[in-house]
Length: 135
Image 1: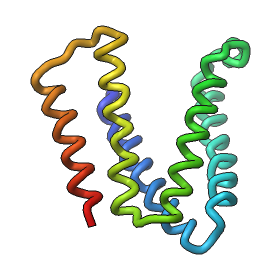
Image 2: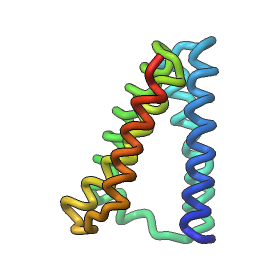
Image 3: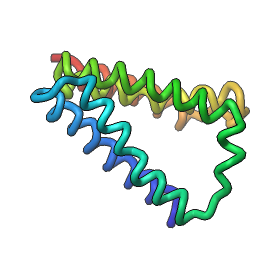
Image 4: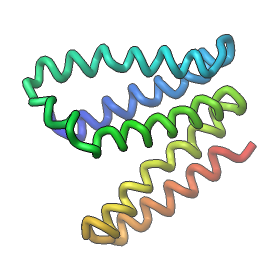
């Protein structure tokens, strides 16, 4: 499947995930929703790993995946806490600016190159988040 189609599917599912956070934390403690939703992440992950046939053992021995998991966990703790405390229409656009970070880091550390289009994309993404989060 084309990587752009995969990205669109990921975007849709993650958007539904963020909306679901707001819905479920309205009725349940955010900490318990965080725990259960992150445990349930294992189901599609295990299915994907099983069917991909990718070797997994080497990842357990590497620090990188563990550090990424910790960073992602911290991100989720703050996302769930923010969603419980504030309106999704404000929290989601601010959180959505995470997409700017890998672009900037890719330009700085991976020499991916900066273009007018990328610069405008970053500016418009920030502008969109600001406009969407104003109440």
